[in-house]
Length: 478
Image (cartoon, rainbow, N blue to C red; front, side):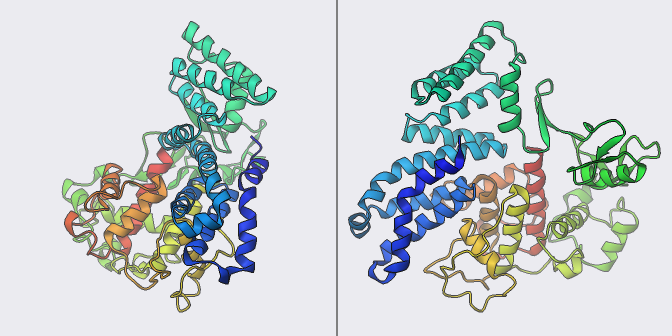
């Protein structure tokens, strides 16, 4: 798919609206103005390769088509929105798959086909997912449909090639017998992100740290082959594994004291299991991680019970946030772990987390729909607008309320949205699905909270630090 030309055609009918918006804004009703704003936001997201975030704006815009003033003025656009939404679901499917969010990718593709079963690309994407699951019969059915929907010779040839591939698997039961041509297509464009390659024998993406010419290795940024020296290997260890150093024999990276490799042996994590049960179950309310005594205890000997396990994890979380520009403090005291957090402060946490984890470029000059952020911290102004543009924070009546404290329920909902997007909010309480998802991902361990008061209790800065750090680990291991 040539994405640029596809997007140009997809949104060509919207540009004339944006032109009208700036020339005759005073002539439009509030509904019409909001409708155009939503289309504009969806366009920004799609052009930035963020179709997942474009969808809620498009769906919201479609709801405005039910209003008589909007439909009267924008009938043509409203009539075309279902097709636009179907194609955006297709793009969201492909983007989610590239980000290794396989279950979400499937749901987006299913939704795309439900809305428009004449599309070609969703069937291609679903075949790839079935291939990974070795469900070749289902794969064949998806490519039969893709072939039927193909409109160009190139599409038909591609579909035919993949159907034959599925037939071969069905007849031979060969799990790893893909042709070189198909392997090349999948390795380069679908399974693994840049810097990784898919290894069919172990059924996972692996890093390419050792494929330089003889006598050379990758540098710590993994963007250049450099001479293989002890100094370079020593720099590569922490870049690859985190808290690690080079062993005496030059051959291996070893984790620092009180750190162990995770199950995949690709990162050094705090070895909390070696702590006593009493230390491991201590919650954030009872631990005093910002006292000089606890900080000193943990620095001198992490094995002591006077160094709670959750404090070790918190110190790692703060250092990770500092390294990734979520905070300017790498000290638990200056970080203010027991302080509440305002919506404007949380915007920086969430936006930079989103940028770091999903490798997205932020909008340089986002639109300001709010009436109450002129007095906000000027260093947080653009974070507020990007948080809104990304759909992480919702305002109310054109107000962002930058100085309001974030409740535990609000924080958990925003954080889970970054990983899974919107969940069903029709339950009582409305945040219940977000909390359950967070619990299932082990994000709330050791955090002191009451399910019934989540939306009335302000969240502490260190609880957000722990949840974000754990979510980062969760997504990385996926």
